[in-house]
Image (cartoon, rainbow, N blue to C red; front, side, top):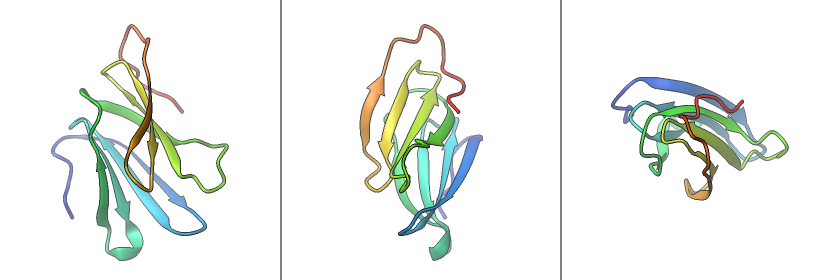
Length: 102
């Protein structure tokens, strides 16, 4: 297991129709996607934030939970594809760090 390099800010777990995921966010500016069914193997690392990742959550309207959102002290909210680890959208405009989204 490849751990975060700083404090973990949040853990979320989901059971999707096709897989189970554990996702962690950290003060090290990353989000990691783990596979608990394969000895918690690290599947993806998301690295587009430039400051602490303070919160993560799945987009609740999706049955398959393929997308999640993250909040950061870099004053952005990012939307991520959980299957690819790619950032699909960045929401800008906050004047202060975004500390929570869910």
